[in-house]
Length: 104
Image (cartoon, rainbow, N blue to C red; front, side, top):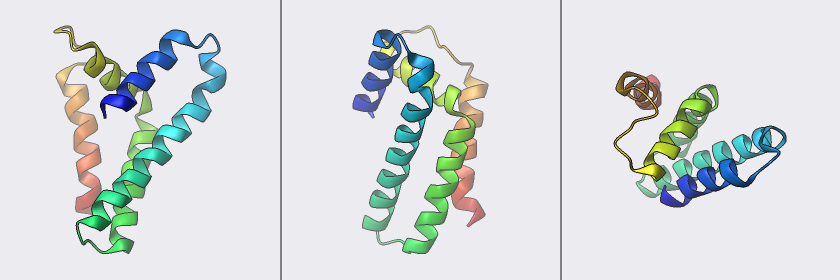
């Protein structure tokens, strides 16, 4: 998580063409998240079909709320006491992610 956060911050600060790289970066992060989700969940002995459904759902939530996720990662890297997002926005995002397991 720390490495991902550092990558987000580095890319935002260094890239002059952030808009051009945005879609590719977003897809890469979402695919990485889904792959890791599947890896971790199947190691815990869960049914692979259900794991894929949950991880696909979480990937969809991440895709739909990517700007919120980016701000959460930047805030985590910054470690300041000045939150970039309200607690409600962060809580709402986490609730959507956790709701994926309840749907299956």
